[in-house]
Image 1 (tube, rainbow, N blue to C red):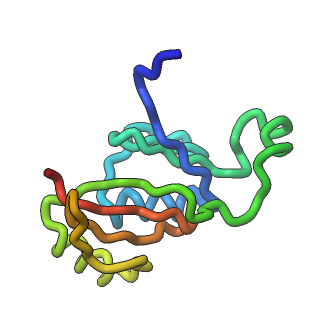
Image 2: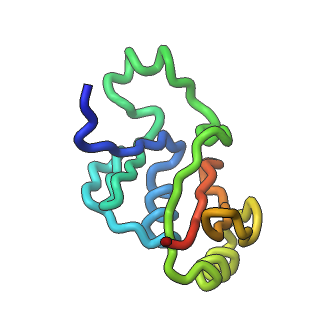
Length: 124
């Protein structure tokens, strides 16, 4: 098996709410929007959980309800970590923790509308 192109797909409860969060709040650019699936330029995709195809087969494995379970972290970068943190907190985004200095970089973490953890760090 060879992975030439990798997208991360998050199953979300409300595709429009999540699209607005990632597009308007985090500033990601939409590459494709098919209504129930949105793909951003940065290889992140959102898919309406209840509409994943083929629905009859997938519904056996994916249950409706809360999607973010604290076991996935989406990593983004910002050239202005303090400004980004301030902007997101002013927008009312739920913060996991403030800016921390780790051995490899400075980061902070937030939650998206479905409870997925987003880590935002500085480029090296």
